Image 1 (cartoon, rainbow, N blue to C red):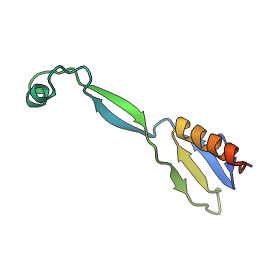
Image 2 (cartoon, rainbow, N blue to C red):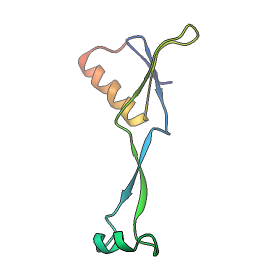
Image 3 (cartoon, rainbow, N blue to C red):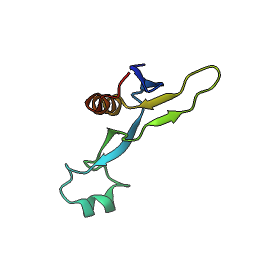
Image 4 (cartoon, rainbow, N blue to C red):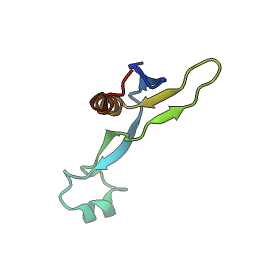
Length: 87
């Protein structure tokens, strides 16, 4: 937990990533696309932070939470500090 924002607990989670393919090391993408199921190509799977956050409503046992990747949560906190709305 990082802190709170307008009554929401801010929780950072490293598992909030999207897996994307990096084709920048491939010389010929069309040829690699045709051959990739039989031959290994220079395609790398990378984890990119999700830009969305997960908002969990409050229950009688826990307060409302905003869950997101640490970089997204940090950007949210920075944006609200600039607006003067942090608690």
